[in-house]
Image (spheres, rainbow, N blue to C red):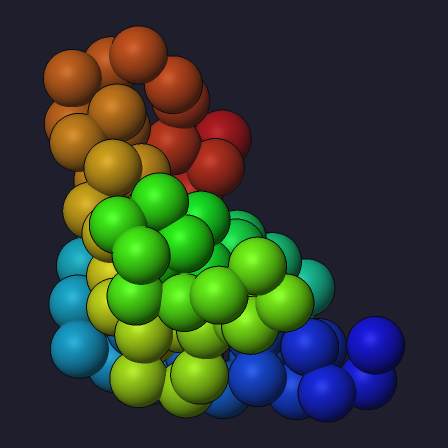
Length: 89
């Protein structure tokens, strides 16, 4: 469990550094959640296309790519007004 949190946090930080913007989710917890969700998305997609076996998970690189995908979707939802920007209260 600690490994998943560490991978998620590192993937979230790398994704936020690669995709800077004013509407990024910020903070330690949101960065970790971003990375963990990205790792789950990358694992799910990898297993769906046959890249990973049933008991394998995403590594740092694919977790970061998954976090970038989640961050891109987050930014598009904020830009379209579907969700509110937590930084603008």
